[in-house]
Image 1 (cartoon, rainbow, N blue to C red):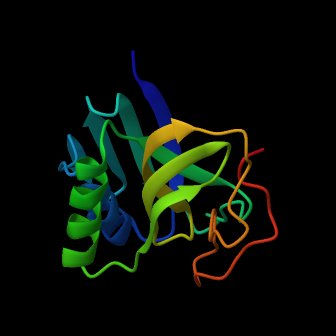
Image 2: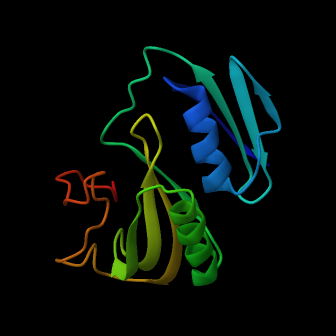
Length: 146
């Protein structure tokens, strides 16, 4: 089973470069007006199409759960090597779980996290956690655990 997501983008080339890095995979299809990523890990089909009306919801975010902290570290290295800004959180409590994660933002402003759950907790988040920070790295008033 795979999840299919279709996202509009103002800059298809920049979005393809971002998602190639995030998913560590080239697109299965790439045309001037469409790109499709098909990934097994995670089970995802991600379609991108140009639209001058692409306006992501700033309170939303997307995530890719990985199996271990090494996969998070590899994502950090890929994103940084591509020159993309990242926010790294190590063993922080967020959404009732101790997690290590990396955040990055696609060219249209969508926040993505690659994360590993170390353990479940009874605490919602660390008081000093940048959990679900906005793209400037500042704490966001939104509740990303909702």
